[in-house]
Image (cartoon, rainbow over all chains, first blue to last red; front, side):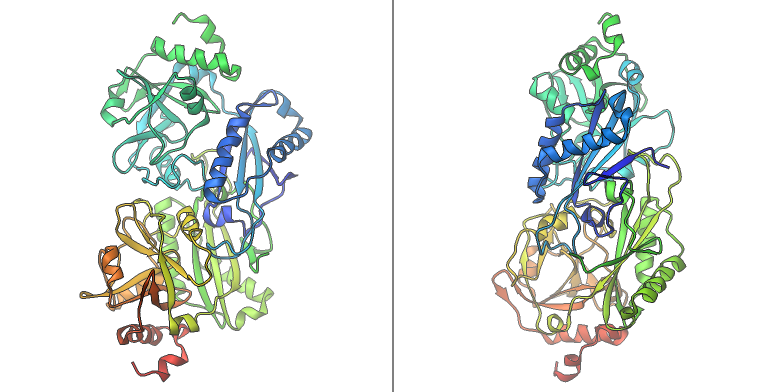
Amino acid sequence: MSAQRCWVDGRAGSGVPADDRGLAYGDGLFETVLVVEGRPVWWEAHLDRLEHGAAVLGIVAPARGLWWNDLLAARAELPGLARGRWVARLTLTRGSGPRGYALRAPMRPRRILALAPAPACADAARHGLRLRWCRTALAVQPALAGLKHLNRLEQVLARQEWNEPGIDEGLMCDTRGAVVSAISANLLCLTGRGWVTPPVTQAGVAGVCRRMLLENGWVGEGELRCDEVDGARALAVCNSVRGILPVRQLGTRGWGIEPELRALQRRLAAIEPAFHHPFLDDELA
Amino acid sequence: MSAQRCWVDGRAGSGVPADDRGLAYGDGLFETVLVVEGRPVWWEAHLDRLEHGAAVLGIVAPARGLWWNDLLAARAELPGLARGRWVARLTLTRGSGPRGYALRAPMRPRRILALAPAPACADAARHGLRLRWCRTALAVQPALAGLKHLNRLEQVLARQEWNEPGIDEGLMCDTRGAVVSAISANLLCLTGRGWVTPPVTQAGVAGVCRRMLLENGWVGEGELRCDEVDGARALAVCNSVRGILPVRQLGTRGWGIEPELRALQRRLAAIEPAFHHPFLDDELA
């Protein structure tokens, strides 16, 4: 049913005890890391975010070397991991505990590594995605906003709003009406202010690809209303598995691929070759 | 570490596959059912709520007989279940699935039954609990409010706000400032309007004990502000594991046990003997 292979605390194929608090309460965090030719992309940035989230939730983050050892163990058992593109999902839960929310004794956090082939992205990076607006709104919760935690029912509900295969992603607002992100990616919007991505202090996830674009000064943070997004000169979504993907349709409006969007993709490819595609060399911007 | 015994899809002691969506996204629901002398209390009402939640999330709820069979299997392996008080946690997840939020193929939901001794409640029912206000606010999310789903990080954070053993529970407001509930129980507040419990259409869980009190007309639904709660004639919390527990302290304010509170406890005991305590006969109200 599932193409995933799993390692729990470094041991292959094992299940997770039914009293794990990640299962009981979504009490944990995760990262989805692109692995290209055996190299995890933006590895330290992913662990930065995981450790920040763990600090907020009061979970003791494992030493970084343990995750690395898990990856090495996986590579030993899955030689194909050294070639091609994979997604490594790192899940950190608070571990097994008794019934109830209270933390009565120190808990031993649990690491889960799951590996699956990465989705193809070259075509989407070239030709773009088709999006729709979601009716499901993201709740405003400053205490959890930005974290990639395991409470993801809003995304699950939003993704159930359509089943047309022609629609690739959905855009979500928060319950105040501010635009936040796509379901599985951050949003980039070319406005009169340049490339803008919404803040993630009230809702949403602080994506690792988004962080790279912000840190390099290629994108700025700014509030966006739906009408600004609908009227944007160009739109794209980004995440750490697929890089920057243009939006070619949102609802009834279509876009061509603007030179500014190709320029942003080239900048990303220049700092991270995993997101270089041959068409970025071939085409004139 | 944990006193829980678990059955997964009716099989004892098994773990849960690491690709379960309950673990990946909190994609599921749970119920905590009091079991007294082998009898699950308010069994049908718990399954009503579970099935309603499953319909909202788009999970196919198992036939009720399957949960019953799980309980029988547990009783066969755990003879002590026929005596005393236990808590049966029923967890329903969407089951195992591939990476990503999309539901690409029908998934087989997974049942998890966990049994643990019930917490003592007679003393608390008699003498009351000490509460504090939580700083962590519940997000406003009408799409999920009322459901007992697996996305419980807000409760986890709220419960970490204190570790004094003298504080038993915390009261939570939503991000708009409306009072919602205790962390693990609904709130009952005796005001000029009689006994009032906040609505659960924006945040909070529609508790099964709360439902019984509302259906019998002993409690009404109404918005509550913090100052109304602080100034209430009497306060109590309720859930289906411990029944109605008086609040004897909230922050710096203390309360005695009002006759109206004992009267409410007696009414509950009259419809559900699991919540009868000898002191309810002995004392004059």
